[in-house]
Image (cartoon, rainbow, N blue to C red):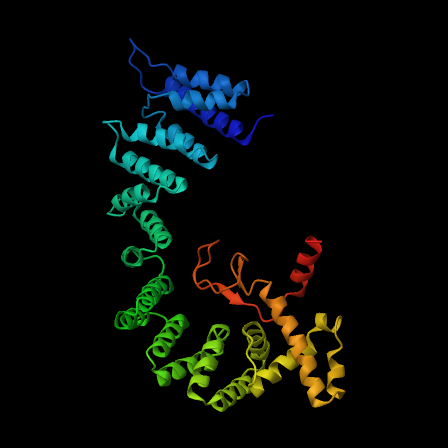
Length: 400
């Protein structure tokens, strides 16, 4: 049965045949010597296709070395087809053959270099791809695409300084802002510096991340972490409070840190009051606070314990298994013991399901990833606010 490749290649060569016929019919010819409308090698390849010998046809066209102005676009199309089929080695050979032509026009050479760079990238040969994209990023008609590809390569290799340079050059060309993306590059450098205890450099990178750019709350989180590591609890608490005051999803990351900081200061009452104020302004944050407390085993703070209990009482799926309302009639000791048992069970369930999900592609993970590994977008993951009972039940049924 003919495949997609068969139809695509047949279409390509029928177009080529039509073009050859038109040139032969209407084009200017030397009266003594007229060129044939179509190269015989292509007719042989077309014959393979008509007989549904797709692999033989592909091998035949790959073996063809001759490339002229009438067939070069067909070779580019073949190279692209090979790449999509996963036969990158063949695509590479085709594009290398095109580049080897001494009489190739500059625009065609850039096109061949760009195609070859994409071949290398598809094959995971990042160093070779980087070299070609860097060349094309110096002013070719593929400059924008090359710089975008370089940003992607540098992200994979965690070459953040180079990524910043490529991103800034791309921004200078106009079209779209990479402010958030470049801010995250600086934050990556800040976190790496903090890991090496180079807090002075880390602070400078965070400062650059937010200088003249839209504020990313990741910067505040990184600064707060640096402040905690350097025993500057006053600055750390100020930054954590800013995260809470702005009611961002990063409360899921900040809450365990701010609890630890208040415990270090011996002033959990201050946190209790701050959380009460926040929840008064935005009651919807209660579920996220409760879920974060359950996952991280945070307790002993009245407002947080209240959020957790409210969460248990309002969780419809949980009500199918446990009548938590009966705890209200129990003694204080029995009440606390029962809630503690349910809370412990919820914590185990929550640890068995993803905590974050990308809003763009749906990729899920147990921890916050600033760049989604699937769609490669930045800052698109958001935390869950409830235990995913359906996922847990499905997992249990599957493993029976």
